Structures are given as structure tokens and as C-alpha cells.
Amino acid sequence: MPQHQGLSVFIIDDNEMTRSLLRAIIQGDKYEVVGDAGTAEAARLRLRSQHADIICLDVVMPDGDGLQLLNWIAERQPKAAVLMVTASTDRGTVEQALRNGAKGYIVKPFNPGTVMDMLDKIAAQLRAQRAAKA
Image 1 (cartoon, helix red, strand yellow):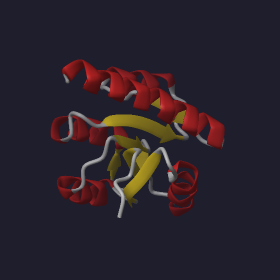
Image 2 (image 1 turned 30 degrees about the vertical axis):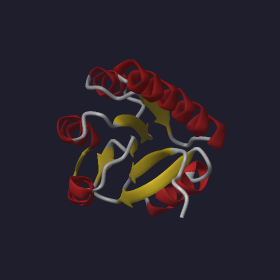
Image 3 (image 1 turned 135 degrees about the vertical axis):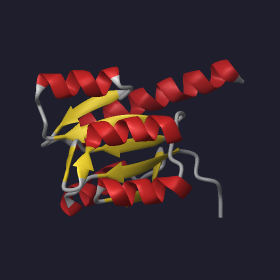
Image 4 (image 1 turned 90 degrees about the vertical axis):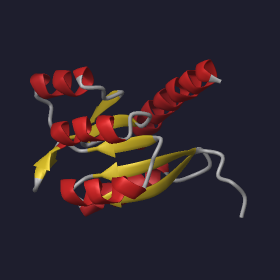
């Protein structure tokens, strides 16, 4: 099987329909969705063994806070770029997410173009960082 040319993406959202929609939007030549999780705990379990280039992360989950999970991801997968995808429009939440390392913030409901534009922007940043280190 040929090596996928795109970057890997992991989706964390408590809404199954949102996860499915993001997967449908993202999966393709540029990006490969390598997994998803519906709770903070499931995300921690899966991300212990699954690495991703980009992680789409919701803020509000039934068993945890996406901002706390963002910090956990930064410690365990420092090379991963996190894109917040959430209904939370609170300015403090947005600022804290970006201050804590999120590379972007998309508010639900989203459209496919917005998701892909943001992923492409993050992918360009990741590739530039990797090229600088090469």
C-alpha cells in the first residue's frame, strides 16, 4: 500500500455527528484521519499510542475540558498542532486556547472551506518548521 502523502489528523469531539462530518471533510489526498475520540479520557488513551500531525479538539466534553486536554497534548505530543473546533465563542476561552498553543480556532457551525483553509494554513506552518530543522 502506498505511503499517504498527507498529514495525519486526530479528531476529539463529544458529538458523533461532528466527528463524522469532520472526517468526511478532512479525509482525502492531503490529510488522513487516523483516529477519533468522543471523550477526554478516550482521547488520552488513544493518543498514548497514536500520534498525529494535527489534532482537532473540542472545548466542551462530558468528562473534561478541552483547554486542559490541550495542555496534556502539548506535553505528550509537542510536535502536534492543535486546531480548536468548538461552539465556545467566549473571548477568554479563545484567548486561553491560543495562548496555550492552539494553532487555530474554528467556531461551530463550520463550513468545509473554513476547516480546509485552516488545516492548510497549519500544514504550511508544520512543513516550514520541519524544513527549518532539516
